[in-house]
Image (cartoon, rainbow over the protein chains, first blue to last red):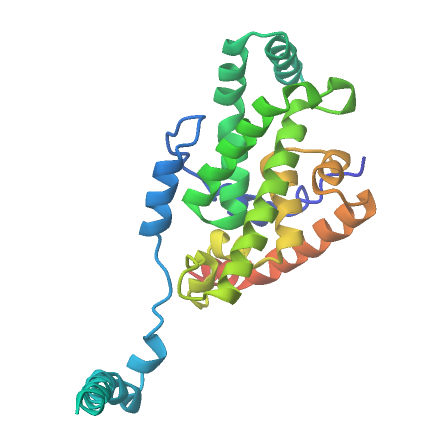
Length: 81
Length: 182
């Protein structure tokens, strides 16, 4: 086997040694219920994010429900008249 | 060396029906497997899931392990690595189908700064190089064992290790100069 390539670089070894990992306490057997809860609780991307970031998108977001309601009302009026 | 022989003894005992031996194996190997997966993914919940799934697989296929083919530690690392790749690929698929339902990957949120911490530098390494560095440096694995775990030729392990060290040095250069000048 070849020699340790990290031996030559003390600075890199010092830096790598700084990377500690805290291991949480968890059982050996997985719980499906806990996994499902964690899936629901995990942060996900906001689908409306691109709309909120621009002024026109924000206006569209505000106007869309009004237009939708107006369309549904119009359909109902046309159906029952 | 003595420690790995003990692992094999416990595994043989477990294969022969000693349930306590599995608990001892879990206590001993949970920490290194979790650390390896966490340093690869930076995702706590995913790392816990993978460690648990690795031990579920060990219980389900306990007679598949043969000490003649390698150490128990390598066998479990290989299982965990394969599970990680499968889960990450599945997550990538979900992200492309339903982007707003897939959990955010922490590595995407890395801040750009002049002085880079070792966590960020390791996270910025390409996946294939990161695993090699982590197994070699943090888990003291020989290159033959790394090749076996990752399913790649030993020459590839050497070249990836060399490339990763070069990249890490370059990434940490800013911090090194800064700390030197202070």
